[in-house]
Length: 447
Image (cartoon, rainbow, N blue to C red):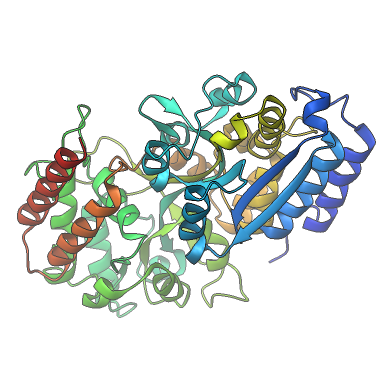
């Protein structure tokens, strides 16, 4: 497969040239002041998209006259390194933040809300709802997105065709039916891929299952509803248990399968269906990475239980502002320009970096106007074959409703009880009841 459009180097070169040519006076929407132009922004990120970030940093420096101190840490060490630096009062203005950390960081005073900064808040109208909601805690917004993604339902079109199946399933009941047919044809031992290892991905997988069964973990009043015997979370847990132990369409080894191993198995043609992060579609359809390249397609997440639409789970990473950046007016203005340039529209008046991250790395975005971009549509057409499904599914993505100051502690228990269901050691009702009790206990202790 060939790359779409201009090469990454070409786009970056054009971007830098435009920045140098236009200077600072013609930048749309970016406030100017001598204090900001002579200032400096300390930006901390994990070691991803380094080339793309460096290119955009060059454009930002040339366009604004603001210097940037850019440092990054490997993802595995990032959170610990950043917390250590924040506690120690290190010189940090802007940092990449996971949605899962927001309540903890906000409560600790490590992040500053941006609600009073109109240059940043104006982008809310062009943002997918789950992205915006994932940056709001206790009624305040804490940043602009770096990227946003959601769990997708992927299928092997070649395998379905060989099984005589003319269309991918639209319900979880149909997933079971089609999986059994595929087994009967001898095309796959375990047609449905679920990566159920107790790692950082599990909450997104089970949230996608719960949401697609019409369920939630937490109600509008903040109380846990996950244990409702008629709710979607219990229905989802029952589905997984039955898929493994009754229908035999999911491998018993799924309980030990991390996301990356599941990805490889899907690419090797061991499964017909799978719940997979959307950004993985390019790797699955890249001949240099996956034997099944060209066969993997995306359908809407199947519905089950009481679901009235094809809901899934979304997540984001975002640019957060520190209180340190608030300490000085010039520094705050420089940090504001940086966040807008990287998380909003830049010198071109476009979402240039977000588009670059998709075309170069396959990372989806939160800014809805890009869905209409011809290059973006061509990207999804090439790698997914279903650009319209990407847009429709993103519109039905829901934020993880369990994100809270006590999320990390609760999630350890939640992972354990779901694993009990996967191993048929706990019923869905017992497992979700324990998770709900733990939620109440942690919330009570916190309050």
